[in-house]
Image (cartoon, rainbow, N blue to C red; front, side, top):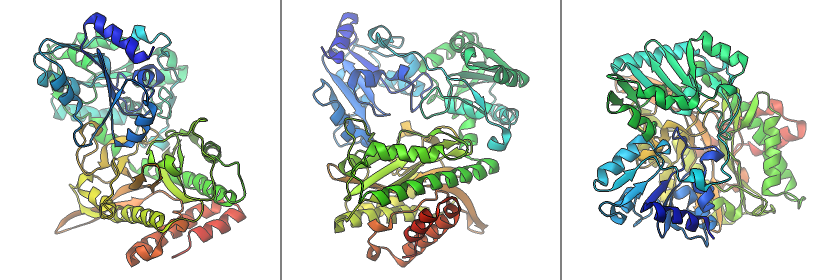
Length: 592
């Protein structure tokens, strides 16, 4: 019998009308370790975003536009209704529950994996519903549930991070004082890794560790599985007067707070945390001070990140050379085999740590699924025709990268060239933006989207996201998006030092997908009587496939941008190539 059907038996037995299973861990992480992949376990849908609601007789899966095609394929023939977020007529989760539940019905979930702001909103809109927040029904149902993740911590030296732990802690305490907060509870894994200058591998391709942190003006408490700390890390923490406690002791510890003013971010702390502190204390709901500190890279981080992009550009250029020079003669190239080749090029770079996410290597119609991941069952053989989309990135000690290139593997139709060139025009338009300080990504998104909208086409995702420093490849609070999506938290002001991807695309179901992605560093342009002007510096260095461009569709200014970009790519990458690769790159970066 289907897992959903068996799970529904538990709901009926417990008289639970609806049960929520989000894609989240105890820290509201975007990507989660296997222990927390209950939604994937029950549905078979493996995307990184989605919420499952199981009722006593049905199940509903919400996911965003990146995953509509993939989710439909993966839940096919399962007793699950796909709710395509953002599509007309599709209710939000809150709207659905408001209509589905009646007075005195029971809604349940595990409060440790639900953000506080989400739960408070549900409580507000479901006033007569019995809400149970301590029901981890997966614990007994999922008999072969993986263990909580375990990995050892390692330290980043200051020549990588630019600031020491103690310097960062001083800045956070200054922000606490500004808010008159006596306590700050920090549960975001990326923020904690940034604060301590420590990394680990508790989440695949996101170098963080499960922990909680409590900061007062006098002390800093870290709650973590002590087995993850070797003697050097333990000594480092103790020298910095960090008080170590067991991971799950966190909840007992915070219960003891009384008459404190506690700074927390309701989007980050889980609801169980909130329940332990809200009655006897004053809570200040405000973004973690570390959110912007982490997003605005310092001079050392910027310098190092550019080095990481040189390494990554070399790796990708070698990959592109390999594919372009073998596609006509080899019948053994597949999505998985070329992905493995790209991985080897990255592994050859000094300071490589890991890929920054599962490589998306998608041929032909597979690329219409924005976050397609090749498996042995879907692994397509590449032929000298159509498009190959490759979205990939690396974690280096020098920083994190994210790059997408779409390669023409053979002759293209005029429509394919039109679509590729339009995506290029979109990417160039955003790259060239100059704007006044105070502008948000939402103000700039139209620059990238307009050329594609003029074709009456849209891509159902944001245009770009922030990138961490050897942290999450998706980092709040900066991004490019045409409307606010609260759960993404990427609508902040774009400020100097922020790094944001620029990745417009066109995706045609059952045909092909096209995306071109560079990373943009926000920089100061000038300050005059009209204000402070900002712009972008492109810090991704790899060729854009000239074979796919219809030159007639580019303006003189767009050609100038592309020629200057390719001139820089050649200058930066060429010293690290073989003679054959160098000659090939000269051809693929020539002026048009």
